[in-house]
Length: 166
Image 1 (tube, rainbow, N blue to C red):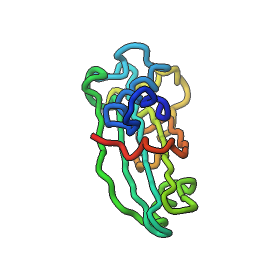
Image 2 (tube, rainbow, N blue to C red):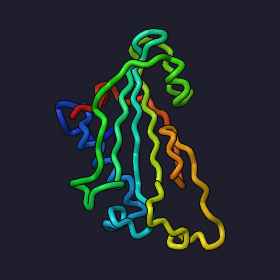
Image 3 (cartoon, rainbow, N blue to C red):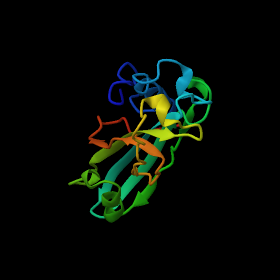
Image 4 (tube, rainbow, N blue to C red):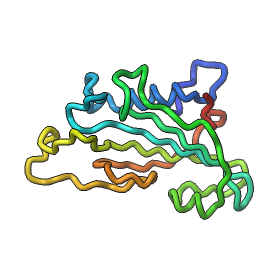
């Protein structure tokens, strides 16, 4: 979805609303109704983080963190979405986020995508079918520990998609 959502537009650059829509669509495999929103009847919400890096020089990278989630709001139109600012970081900081984000030449871009299911205050393991085992909290790239499912994926984006604009 990330690579294809802007195909029918002349300006291919992603917007923060695209991030929100991608996040919403990507959690429909588990949530088929508004159960992904407050009051979270399953006790979990869905959050998708996108960390974009572009190598500026051997030890200088541009970083943009964007985020979409069902951790607030009650419908797709008022989901959480944030992060259109950029910052400059070092190669060591990039490697600390994920070693696969390291780029080999100036101008190269990478995106770390990590979707998570996050426990809410109403979390009840039985509602998810965990009657004996308690799913452990998993630390994600954003250092949060209330996650029960985390997946990290690094891609090279199509040219012109990033950085995300407001």
